[in-house]
Length: 476
Image (cartoon, rainbow, N blue to C red; front, side):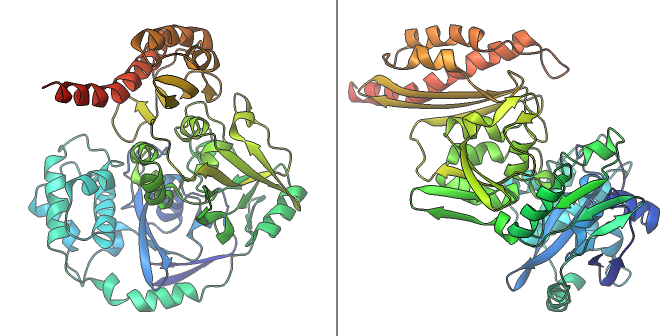
């Protein structure tokens, strides 16, 4: 059974198909059709809703894609849809801003924009354009264009007034905190188990190694919404606090595999700025609010944006199976397309990174859109330079092979060589031996290889140009 607040109404769902998405639950079961279905893949944002959950002594609001969120994820949270925003029969300040700034035309995408803007207003302070652009990047509009929508976001943030959610915040917080732990959800021959601790998860996963682990679900839900498959047994891990812990231990960062990407962003942006910069382009805010780094690794997608950076940083995984743990270099984790070194009943508990950012670590993502898009090529570069000589090299790419992969031959061309353009050009040619990328709708094989080579050239320029500027200044 799951319990949650639908605005201020306590909902108890005992027998609901756990494959049901929040979008279908709202539209089909509750008749709340303000939330729209545009793509059923988390690409358009028309289905955006907001989840509020306890965060200490206050509520934290997260925008999510209802089309990729299974109903089990609602447990212990408050679900807010566009129908809930009216304030004593009047428009909410966010809705009024969309009217005043002419931010709506056909109206199909408008509820999603409104909910993303509502979440921005709730979590933010004064309007900042960059923050607003990130909050709205997961919402697409085919009619109006984005200038009036950004103007509406500015009005909503700068003219924020207390609303019913503010007035009920303490009451809502207390009601959410009083909700007991979830119990298994079952209907239509399908089940979703909901362990509360690592030990319970380990026991259940050994008992049911065929089960699908459900973290954020932003990739797993596509099996239902796009491939129209049934998931007969899932084990939801969203209630396990230990999997969401993020900490620094001596010279290592320990990232819980179940921590949402948006929760990891402040830490990674602080310790590894290049990682933080790329993470800001990872899909959309809605996806980052749900998706996890552990899930991004475990699904072993060749175009996952996290793995190349982690490979270049020499990350390690803490794996858990039954009562045992083991530590495995990420280098040894990816076996083949969507195949990993995980044993039956084994799961990723945490990801381990160096706490000290390498001075020359850089990463870039190339995609058709700046935001809310999947990489054609993602490259991460980490060289150690000593007195003009390359002492160590770790280069990794996504989108270039069946798995995220190190460029071993390219690295060999670099190690022990002087830091010069001629060295880089020899390494560039070696990339053609490291990779034979596929052609697909995102990019051709030739384009991918050329992009990877040019990213290595860009890396050389990025590290060399500051030094050239210093040298020029010294001779003036």
